[in-house]
Length: 512
Image (cartoon, rainbow, N blue to C red; front, side):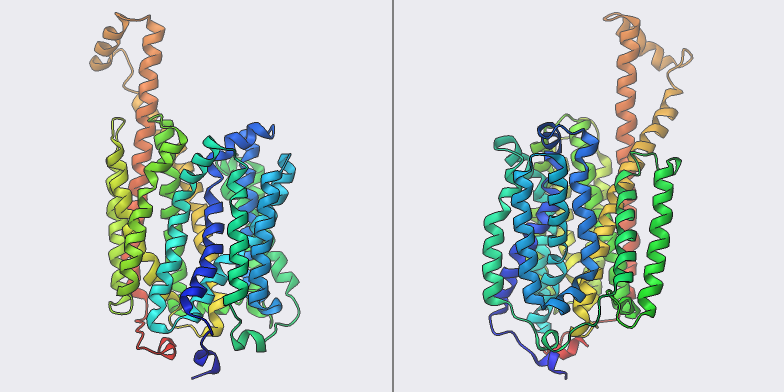
């Protein structure tokens, strides 16, 4: 048993968990809280709706670049010091976001905020996994998972309420007291394990960091602007994809060959971690994909205001809280692979139920599948993290959590880009198919047109019928998307069997 495995923190692990979760919840919340405020931000800062989306993109790009480099930076500066500095940067840049008088200043502040926030998730996960003994890691991941799963769901609702009742600036100002408390608690309760103190990384891997920054930034840009630019019919998108692919391939080759990589990709040789990383990317696609689709469906087709559409998605958080409490107790007692399979099955079924939507659907028909989806995500997220990191040594966990969290975020970005693209293309395809029925030779169409022309002019009747057709075509595209996401969940279910069995037997060394 190594010294790293013998080490135990001086304070109660739950005090440590609360300290890191405060900062993490604040950071994850900020990835989605600004979504519903974009029209207000655009209007207040004299920007177009397209320009206002850079408020989200700028944050995600800098966040993605810092995520995988977190472990190296933690060794270089000392993890505790680095965590406190990151919370400080995040909090100060939040104040700067709220006080921004122009779009340029807001984007600069969001880049800083993303850089400060990028390190918070992997550090929190690594600190929790190290602070708890092996048999309690499931409970630790349940606490962490509650923040990661619930925060993006309540973000749009909270953002809508604050924006409607106060000002969009307060969605950033609310971070300031939380950030100050998180700094004080981190300074008081968190400490660096012996191997962090004893090991210092060598020179910074500038080439690796540069290739990673260029690759991830352009990839995020492609996901965000692809549909708007019509994908590969745009020279800008085509060139961006080429740059991203070349940079990321070069990054992988360089990191595998250099002696002191900024991101140690060799950890992916561990089977459990490789399978877990692939599955967490899939979770990101489904979680962020459905979170993007539902408010859009409720606002564009059913005419819900922003706050109510956010509230319709929020019941997922209720299900997640219940399951996190339950799963935290089951992880050490039930084979994690079966918990993951159960979770993916329920997520798949609850997502497929959403494909039964229509234009007269009640709010309850949206809310209940969300409760079950949230409940199931707890059965996926907690055991998935424990299984993915369960065969790694403590020294590997910091590096692994950076890669793991990055892949969840990349999956989320890809999921949002994919569903918005498939929605637009699917609506066009269904519309083209349905228009073929609007002919003088279709008796149903002629009968309906005749009825409408007794109440309005012919152009008005044709216009009204066409508007109904567009809404029905768009509805069918939403149904296709939900079925595709459900099918993806069911494909992930047997993949859980690829994990090697991890059994905690009451000592941390049993995990290795």
